[in-house]
Amino acid sequence: MDIRLAVLSRGPRLYSTRRLVEEAKKRGIDVFVADPMKFSLYVADGSIDIQYMGKPFIADAVIPRIGHSITKHGVALLRHLEQLGIWTANTGQGIIQSRDKLHASQILARNKIPVPRTTYVRDIIDVESAIDFVGGFPVVIKVTQGTQGQGVFLRHTLHEACSLVQGLLLTGKSVLVQEYIAESHGKDIRALVVGDRVVASMRRRARGREFRSNYHLNGTVEKVDLPPEYEEQACRAARVLGLHVAGVDLLEAEHGPLVLEVNSSPGLEGIEKASGVNVAGEIVDFVASQTAFSEVDLDQLLRTVPGSGVLSLQLRNHPNLVGQKISQIFNKGSDIPVFALSRENKLIWNPTDDLLLRYDDVIVCYGDLNELRASIKNAIIGVSKTDFELNEKEESNA
Image (cartoon, rainbow, N blue to C red; front, top):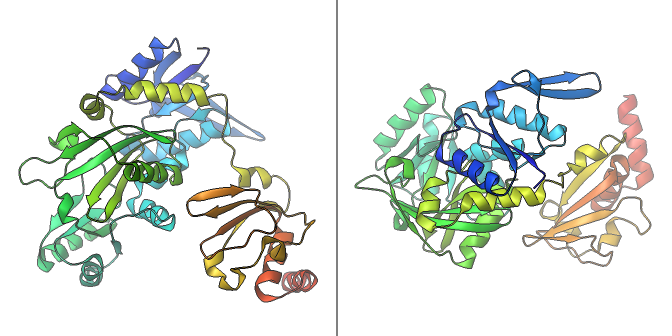
């Protein structure tokens, strides 16, 4: 294949990095390992550039294996590559969203993906109410920034929980109190998502009295066949966080799967050995198939046109619009197209004007922002477009 592929990794001898390089070479791909800390990023008037170890960096695609300790620099590098039009297996935004456990949970919950009940604790006085909210003891206490099971604790009494939270807060950590799923104690499922499908999965079990099942904590792994419901939730979790390659950790609760975390740089050793699947090969094949197509940030693209952009309208915030047709909000012949409508975990592209709106719908529109806001305000509170524009001018003059 006529593709130049870079694997961004600080450890060329690590199992995952070696496997990606091996599979790329088998497919005739020009592949090399690049240390993320050895890049130089340049921004000048009207242009951007990048060098690796003092020489021009040339690649068609990159597979990021960004360690947790260099997340900030790694994300800056990926964003720079994205602006240069180089395809990345995971975007900088996707990585930074997935590594903040609170932010990831917020995005998942907003998209109706089931997660354990979670509370953000900012003060010791919040602990008792947080424990009540998640269902009582025992509770899981974790920091928002952690990896491979680090910073995750199980506590059984209020005294233990308060002492731990106080200690974490004093060290500057952001703390979460999370529901304990008893039926999933010491085990979870790791689903490896590539593109929009689960290519491999395994069940991880903790040893002894340890409740964390991470492979790096001496946990055991075994192959597991995922039910369709579990596969669907894993794929949706990776998708809404903006990740093409992800390890999705699922808990087996009585009422169905719960998404615990989403890992943007999943290790390949455990899951390849447990499942027998050539995961590295699946990743390389996916990257090769996608390299010719660069993803576009539509909002950023449209903002290059003065006054234009993308806005969304959540019907749950405007119940008076429920039951109306799109044509009643945006008049026919309007220059403001509704190019997508999100409904029940699906996107309806170019919805028809006579489509009746539902409570959980989200309308996505693009065009002139003033025109768009005027049309929405007219539909919501009955302010005409002319009056809206006059009010805007009066406010700006004031």
